[in-house]
Image (cartoon, rainbow, N blue to C red):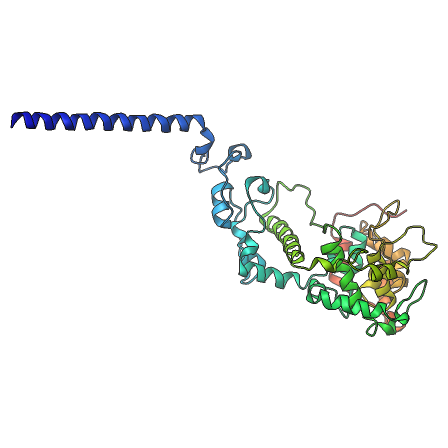
Length: 393
């Protein structure tokens, strides 16, 4: 009996010794790994009473962007939360969980498309973007101002161009099959607006420019110091970025055969290129010619289009001149209008000239077909809110 007890004690002692050795080995391995990779515990060592610096955040463990709030909480300091209207883009997409905009978010595993995978966020963004005129977002300020300052009877919106691209192509084909719609030179006939599908022609040209012909570029609200934004400014920059991402995702859904090129539509493309003026110094591409044709046929929006402003005009860079063929020709060609678009410092004499021009353009005493309705809120903001540019010589 004593031998059995002794044997049992020896057995337990052996198990204890081996268990202790195994546990000690595990501890040594863990400590070795812990000391070898200090960045793995950097977040837990931060002082919670002070926001982490960029250097402290550098090297944090990447987290799969499956949930916006989890990614934001684990990797970035928060921006003070704001109250958003229910159903707004900011509320539906969870902007209060977004990291600060100025962080190099894309280098830290942030996927801007993650919020848009939510049906609620996608729907709210679609409702918001559908009301935006894509030419309001042009990077050229002079081109943008023409659309910001006038009120159109039939507004140009993203909803309009995304509604039926395939149908717009069919309507374009119908217009190009009719000789009365093929206007060139200085020809215009606004009465052909409906029968020659002027609206569809512009829709199709813009779908190609925004989605199929090249990478779409848009303007962003300018702030002098992107590293020092207010919560409101921070959310606006995120909203603008998300708008662009939504448009790009929407474009990816399109059939690539809608691209208006000599490869996909050789006969139509050749016909449109034949509308080119033989005396033109700068040759225009097919999309520019389509936009001008739409203006000749009476579409209001294309009658506001201006060429991109360069010291030396470049081929294929938004050289359409729809303003020459629409009802806004006299207004947009005037020197006073050009002074207005420059956003110069407030000046009483210049303001008097500008308001006289605007009042005359809006007056019912002139030809009603050329009367213009202005967006006065945008005009006042443009003229009176800094910053301003130098005076026109």
